[in-house]
Length: 586
Image 1 (spheres, rainbow, N blue to C red):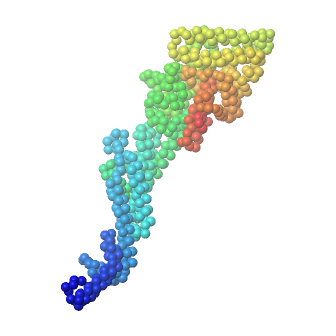
Image 2 (image 1 turned 120 degrees about the vertical axis):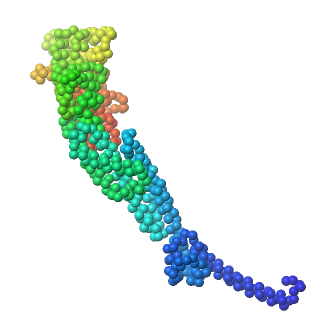
Image 3 (image 1 turned 60 degrees about the horizontal axis):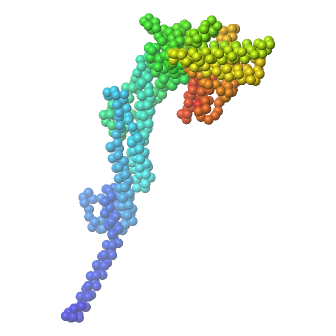
């Protein structure tokens, strides 16, 4: 205190200050106690519904105009601090959820389908990639589940549930839409062919209706690609579900139709549906079937057709190597493709049978240099095997029944001379086809020479010795007028599958053992399962045995996508066509 001020005055002033200070302190303490309530009331997230709850608690009507803090204090809001804190916290929680919901709404306001032009046709569209749509859908559905799981969802629950229904509809519609598009793209290509439309008129009519709906929907989607706008079109999901049901029925009818074609011509079982439909869609033009022939006949690259009035007459087989085999009784490519392909198959067998008989008859009358090239490659090799079999057996009989003990050695000398003649011939200037015939025959004849030398070293002297019986032996049996192949106690008819002018596998002792195992299994009505490391020749050995017996051999590369239905179809083909199969990596 200042020394100039009288003592009583200083005392009075000090007392007044204490009174003001204490009053101010009381006011500040009261205001401090009210601060949490004031902060809750000042929450910017508070909406009209939250204020309505507060005024209802205060027992006062919510003013239409602006209201003041003084009014709230006069209503006794401080007495309801806990309730106001709860309402404020709810408002904050709801604001966070509303912000999340707003983000979802903004995402779908901007998300659109990508449409791409189909097959470069004007005004024909399909959905492009939908990966972004699917990712946004999954993220939004997770966010909605988060919102619904929150205790603050009450104020926006109805809107959130509406969006949950909307996105559920999008998910279901998108699945049906994509399924419809896949089926439509597959069938549209099929039913665009007039031949298929004529053969399946009811299914074609049904597909045309779906085709019109799908194209119209895609035009609308291209014009207005927003995802939500498209999928919320009235009854769109039901329409897609119905369309997919009908498309499934069409595909089933198509499968049944293809099954009838496969039943008529069993080799169709080895083709996929797409490959078979490509053949069936061009039945009016036999020439259009040519590119697919090698899928049914391994060695037939194309057929030669006649000219003019004989344009539908098949005159010859053509191999990939360029060998031409004229039909003995030319079939005609008319009517259903499966019927004339079956007729062609029968003509192939009869032609090769007649050619083999003629080749056998000419063996004694023609010079060898001319005989090699006078007939197709397959009969030449087969008759060459018959010649060797008969020669060895005649020598063995002589050794058994006469004193001519070197009959087999004499035959082998003649056989080696014959091989030498072929070697001299192959060194001359020959056309590629002739050179291939000699190369394949040399491979087989050299193995035949080695076999006889082994028999000589072992002292074999009778046809019933196992060393001879285990060889693959060819006979032309007059009673059946056909080539019969024997090995050990097995017997097979030559199959007359056209093999072209192809090379043959070099036969090793292991090959002979495989042949014996496989022919023994076939004789018992079983199959074989050659085992060994990759690249050791399991498949090629089986295929070469099929060539030796002139049978069709179908190689199937098995994989994880192989289904029971595919296997049943394949086995149906094997059973009906009489073909062999190699199941690689089964």
